[in-house]
Image 1: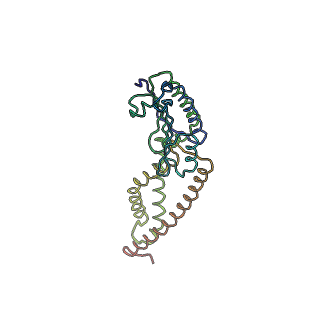
Image 2: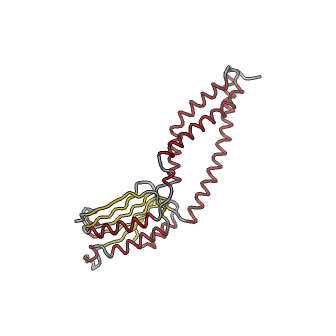
Image 3: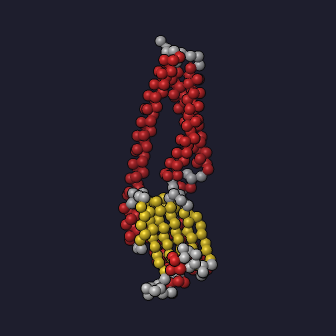
Length: 265
């Protein structure tokens, strides 16, 4: 029965072909020093298995060689998860209740973990430290954007944008209304509307931030670099279109309100 276990959550890692190869090679080496490697199963083979699992584009595959894993990794549009495993026969048949195993779970949606368990403490410590050292060399700086300060900045940004949009909208609406303090009333009305919408808008902005700077980032040099360029261009077009639409909406609101409360001659 496995008596020793170490695990650690993995954050802010860029997963590229180089990291995949390094982890896979280390798993090959560590599997041959695993205590269960000396045991021979019913098929006459070492009772240790190396399994790679990749999920991408809403489908998943289990493969048994690094080359197969890299082929799926490079052809994927959106990689969601990669799992590296060393499993003893006992671990596989007991759902990890007994027997040694090593898991490296890299997931850009759910928490990611490195977990090693064995009844041999030296093997467990050695395997854990060697994999952790490899992963540490591929750390990214996404933690700069994924922290409470970023959420505070988004909140402040929302307040400033709401204030600016309300001023702009009031400047479009007020000229069409003859009531006293038309600009102030229009400004307060728009600010009230924006404040009620900000809860949903802020939530979506936080999701976009986490998506743009994921804790586990899967990166293919050519494919993902073009993907970021595409996102930037599309984002700019959407922003420009939104401003044009808002300008028209504010003008329309002003004219409609003018019909009811009086139109400037």
